[in-house]
Image (cartoon, rainbow, N blue to C red; front, top):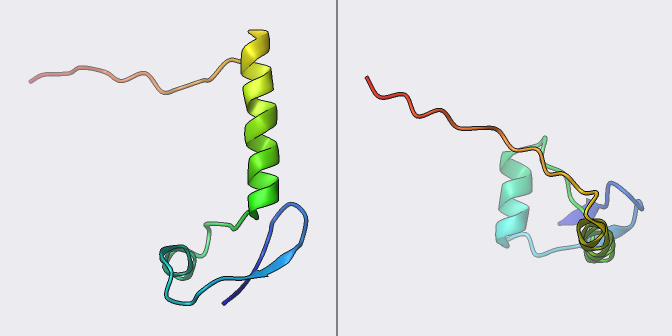
Length: 66
C-alpha cells in the first residue's frame, strides 16, 4: 500500500496487511506521517517541554455520580 506523508509529501510503501494500513483504510480522516517527521516533531516537543513554557491542555473530567 502506498501512503504519503502529510508534512513532507514523501511516498512510502507499507505492507497492505499491517495494522497501520488497516487503520488508514478504515478511518480515512486519519493521516500518515513518516518516521523522520514523527521523530523530528517528538524531539522538538521534548525540547519545548524542557524549557518549561510548554502547556498541555487536557480536558478536565467531571465526577458526576447520580
